[in-house]
View (cartoon, rainbow, N blue to C red):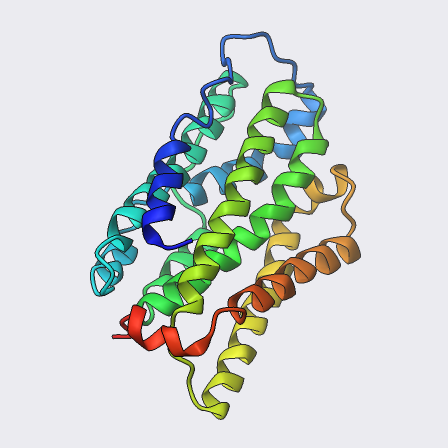
Length: 243
């Protein structure tokens, strides 16, 4: 797939939550609400980003089809925040305006260039792939399970989209590649630890102990790394500006 294909995909997926009826009766017990409340507040906040720095970096991309893709991608992420917010409102869970973990991720995305920004986003999406699977099983809410199922489908495509973009960056020297891999691994593993610390109630209720969270998330991470390296290196300098 190229960026024209991705643009068509994002356009075709705009009605992804159309079949979810927020007016239908939905049950969430007091215990379930207590389990997911703070965790859901944090993830809902994290999904709701304007993507200002991502936009500014995306404008440097030489492919004219990339910026429209990013616009649609951000809109899709915001739709996740919107439906999670609607679920929260239905069950009297207030939204929060910020959290320090979300603040750290936003700061990391601003550090240096498009590649780093995409890396931080990809890390969050890998985390989300496991988290929403746990959240799906953490309650018996039919509405929340439908939301989680669709978000998981979207995250699979988001990961694929980010992998494609990262595959187009020009390879660095051996030392540069080694340092980059070390940073990526550290970012991924460190994020797992932080997310477990703040969301372990949801993970545990959803059937994920600490070991399973680490193993499952890192398996996704290694699969992602293999996917990024599949693209031949000679196309990278041609298709992607590394400014």
